[in-house]
Length: 220
Image (cartoon, rainbow, N blue to C red; front, side, top):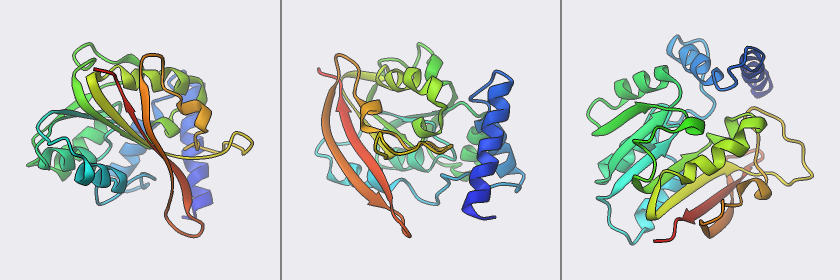
């Protein structure tokens, strides 16, 4: 299946769920198709996110704190953080994703949780020293994204850091999706949080994708 055909398929799944009043339900649909061998999750990788690995290897804060992975999917990033000594919680709105993650990482000491970023349970808020988000916000429909983005910051403890990776676009460019590349303006942190660093990177080939890598922090 070509990339154009795949994108059309993802759009069909998302638009169907939007019409039924469950705009985030397409994640579960997609992971079920992955489970049944009928489709491939577009952000599926066999290794942890490269930007997460760079952060972990260059970070001067030793592991051992509380970490959380948003929209963990099949669990590579969560398993990686746990392997480095972080006490790791990983959540996804799609129960099938978590079933597949457990199967792929049976020995990983990760707490796998079904949760919706836009309606976080109180057991997750304010609990984490480090939060990682890659490719989840860009797959959330525009109408919900403005709600979901500030919710990610609610996970942080005072002094905690949030590392975000997402496809980038300029405000003048069309936002074709899902997934929808994000503008700089969509990623301004909510009041009370700090943008500590911002990088624009290139990933992939022919042509490479522009991506944002942003580190935010909740002041101590």
